[in-house]
Length: 224
Ligand SMILES: CC(C)(COP(=O)(O)OP(=O)(O)OC[C@H]1O[C@@H](n2cnc3c(N)ncnc32)[C@H](O)[C@@H]1OP(=O)(O)O)[C@@H](O)C(=O)NCCC(=O)NCCS
Image 1: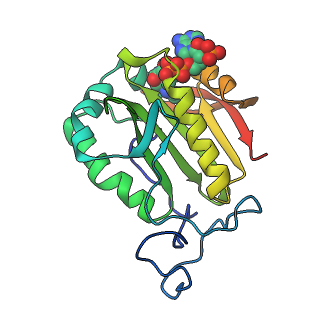
Image 2: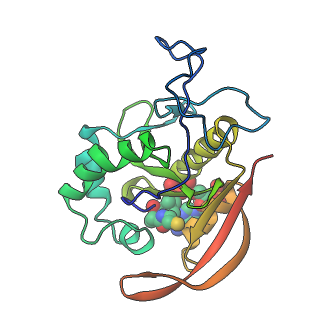
């Protein structure tokens, strides 16, 4: 998760949803063609609003301003700070900026989907999941996730990632989703394996975080 900076270039969507109420599906005069276009799995155009996905237990939905409190708390967790790209320190202003500006703008530009993960019964905030198209290769996306510390080891991250990847392969032209994981992050590697991602290799000294050069393990799942 980058917790902020959208990637310029590729587009996650850009068309209109055929069954979007109030939208004439035959009128594409003002719509940018979807890029990447949906592949053979789906011949529909893509939604203009971010998806809401559920498996009956969790919900993956757009961020809302009322999420700022729990997002700010989740961002303080040492493991989130260690393994994700959230700003350090993570302030309430960072959370407000992300929810109010970064996430909606990235979606509007078709560059990324940043979503909250919540409890379907209670509405409680559980974590985050996101998908960013790789610059220069619009059929490939990188996913990221974290779970609030007190809700871990209950299948939240795996369920959220599965929902997001299924949506991605069904509703967009993305054919490959990557996870970029620090090889020392056993919990994230376990989530990747649980969701059918294959470890393809390790890029040495691929990134920097907290002043430290880090290796990046590439895990990937392909559209069936
Ligand atoms: C990694 C993280 C998202 C996992 O979230 P989670 O909701 O606890 O994960 P799940 O409960 O869905 O677990 C999925 C699988 O991973 C395993 N797993 C989760 N945490 C684990 C850990 N610390 N050690 C070993 N296995 C672990 C689970 O047992 C489960 O495997 P199973 O289905 O075969 O039993 C969470 O630990 C976290 O937020 N870490 C900090 C941020 C982070 O590392 N994000 C990923 C950056 S690439």
